Image (cartoon, rainbow, N blue to C red):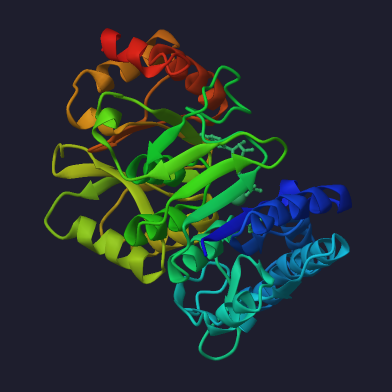
Length: 413
Ligand code: ADP
Ligand code: ASP
Ligand code: MG
């Protein structure tokens, strides 16, 4: 019998009415002859509210206790979803991550799934029950509750789909699918019918929160087809799948902007071998994830090094660089947390040129200064001033004609 994993995000189950209509969707799939595993997020803004409450009580809450707290949002949703299914006359049973053997590492608030023991789920499915699992959580080997990072319910859903060899993983959300840019920022954004794992991986890593980055890594590794679908209508959404040759004709398939990074510049670093190694070794020791890095050509034996880190890591990154300032003989350290990173992504970039030029010209026409640039095979990112983020995204979306069907752009490229 085919098996479907259906994941419902926070807005899709925000209140009783939404939970009931999500339950009807589950039952429709079940009644059509599928085994169904449902994964639920916390309702509405529940996770944000729990976080706000935690920080009201303690400005540096323990990450273990945060996980104890945050995981409850998903637990509530799972019980409510099972009740909604019961009220419609169908069998369902709810579980938290720990009960279905989701084991993670011990990185509280950002844990990774290590293994899943699917026996319990299989047993319930074999009794024809709909299994509802609280997303976003697991347990480490010392029996501490962990959470998988913001947006992590998608990863629970894909991990279960991979483990159970599901035929499809449907991610129900508050938009009609994956668009060429966030439709809440770019009204003319176009919904994509299909997108490759690599493209959505880059878009999600660069800030498109529509799906959790790690869920895509898993889906790609285990070949799990994902559909991102609307919960509030019957649209077919966007299929995330392996790259097919037709995709290469589309040079740029999406654009995104993120404001979650900050920039540090170390001015007047003594220009000799081993300096960069020293800086980034010390940052790595503090678990600071560095994203973009640029080092200028040295002059008079001195050089400047600029890099970006997640905003939340800025205090520790600053403290670390200040600590080694003397050792690397740096003159000054400057931080800027009012930056945004704009990215354009497309597998077609591998075989087309001129993308960087078009991107830079567009920003120049908008009088937007580029502070940093980084590229990968299928992506170009620019750091710009935070206040210009939305305007830049709209302009770039227009310049690459992302609102038009791809053939139009291909001819123009
Ligand atoms: P959920 O609660 O269902 O997990 P999320 O808020 O995590 O939903 O993700 C859905 C949101 O992602 C949308 O409301 C939209 O604003 C945002 N988003 C960002 N980039 C994109 C994109 N390229 N396509 C669609 N949605 C996007
Ligand atoms: N509830 C968690 C969050 O808001 C996880 C999720 O929704 O996927 O980040
Ligand atoms: Mg989400």
